[in-house]
Length: 76
Image (tube, rainbow, N blue to C red):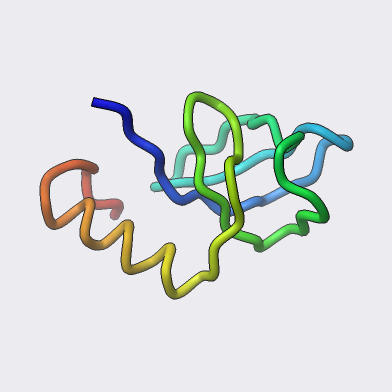
């Protein structure tokens, strides 16, 4: 099963990389596929690549559904 998850951009590293947070875990991601990202933006992350931007409300609904369904651990 392939899984893409919403993450929040916490820092822009350069034109093609950023730091992103999900569930308290921060990782460097490739942002080459999404233009004009800013700190605080949410993106869909799959295998290390940001695929598309989404709004905060949709990201929160998706994360809640994934946690409720046992796909992700609930964050503290």
